[in-house]
Length: 456
Image (cartoon, rainbow, N blue to C red; front, side, top):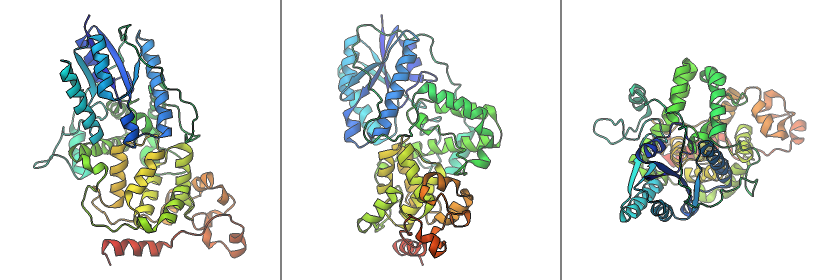
């Protein structure tokens, strides 16, 4: 009997899983393996919300494997050591896994390849597992990646994606490969009370409901803060509980303007992956070199107020409180709070990116870091000096103040006219509001930004 190992990382599913399919073709039996790597914690990627969601994903993956005659083997320890030990124990000749793009993923693959080579085991890394299109599949003339989204989107859209593969009917697993108990989800310290259930089964249920229902209106409603008309599929894509190829294909099959707008957002995710694959250092350093004198060290109190949702700007505070409660935030709200931190308070984007990674269930090094840089003007944005006014944005995308009232109960009784500018309430009414004054005048924030960027 021949055996192959499938190392699951950010691809916790059975549907449309090329490494698993390749392993099943190459061997009589496979070992589905997940390693709880302490390096994830030491690198700062670990967080309570993602640990809880991961536990759901692993439990669901194990249950799905059991229905197919298999099981998930869990090990804890350095990835190279544990995978090497499992491969040796079962006599595997190949290990299959999804290719990654970050510095951490590259280093993990390098160490794993070296370890397996000493044992005569071949490592096969598969592209287009965590993305719809592999990084590097399309490149412009004279460069190794696209730095501007629109031309990338045109090339990306013209590619023919592979047909998603169904989950295998059987996954035969050797009986004598030992594993550790799966982690329990539990509420745990630091876990947001409103995080969703994880796992492929839940992700596929949500995807089916989204394609049937919300997708058609996505183009018109995706910025509606109160309507919450986005897919909320990002955690499932981050953990690979959903295949991005499958999501794109199902949206395209549905068709219409809503599907086109949604697929564009999925392409934005791939765009960042191809940037990070070419420039892995951009996870910690500016993609576009700047000599900015960030206001971060002088702004400890401002940073704390931003994190806690007490800036005095209702739509910003609503978004930050949603993040803390749900481990998730509406995309338009992410843009607003990031602009406020980096362009109004003029705080280093890394401060905000770290806070997001501490709380987001979908906290993804690639998209988190590069989206923050895009807003901060140090990334791929072709208009790096744009500043989003939280009052104007609040009135536009939450015109009745429903989103604000949902997350900032202190303002629940404020009439719509003043909901985004409570400091303009008549003095007697303002005195009754247990809500802070604006942290900074927007004109002062704009002046701070222009001075730092050397603009008049």
